[in-house]
Length: 402
Image (cartoon, rainbow, N blue to C red; front, side, top):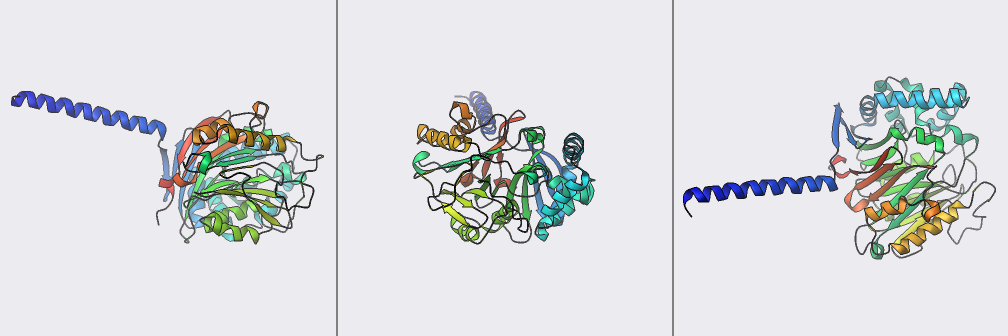
């Protein structure tokens, strides 16, 4: 082959190589979409994954709050107007003083470092401290009068149920249907504190600082389901707040076990926890916490009633807890067997996309958001029904590297 022919051949091969590389990169991006950068403020960064806001926060707690408040100021103001002013005060008839009493009772028991986050938010969001504290309690105003249960489902698969693939966790956050109007303000917040604690990510409404669903940089995943009705203990820190500290302080199930044994919650809860290797459930009354290990090797399901065999109390009061908790639990066990050996994030999506009526765990009226987590990969997938379909958020690059 002469020099001209060789040159042409090399150019063609180079073009094909680049084309193939671009195609491979595009295919990879379709499978693992990158976060879209939106803004930056004093070390904090705002991204979007679909319509979901993702904030990466760095520094001390006041600084992280200031970053949060500035980056999400428009969302915080809009949510405050829609939820506090328009809904709870004007539509539902709550007085501002009653809302302040409820919000203050929750905030007053916060550890100082988490108060610093909210104070920092208040400085940059334009809301001020009083309104910021009110927004932090958005989920609690209708619940203080009477807690409604029969909400939330959790399911984990690993080992034989994933054919040796990584553990995958599915979580439905269910609540009063009124929260569907506010679910468009869902935020994934990554807290990289400079105090030596483990970086942690929370999934919650804009301005709400506690852990109902979260994962840390060590791959510890925690989510909370409501438990059987037992009332409140008003002089204890909210269990949701305590779970934020658990994410910052513990790296695995073995580490977190003693912490649960030493903790009494402020209300009856079922907390489901997973690390890279396994999952279990902690059932807490106001007086005791007991670990419930998986019912099957490699599969766990939990809804809203205590399943541990050592409990002597009545597990369900039918007058306050409808029977859908049992039904959702049985449906999850059946789906576990249906997909045994096949579980991965896509199969878990199928499980969570299945309604109660069709043999799944999901109430189309009350499921506010859904999360799938793979702790070994530091990835989550988030869905807000009616607003955002399943979208991937890779948390690994957002966590501070030690």
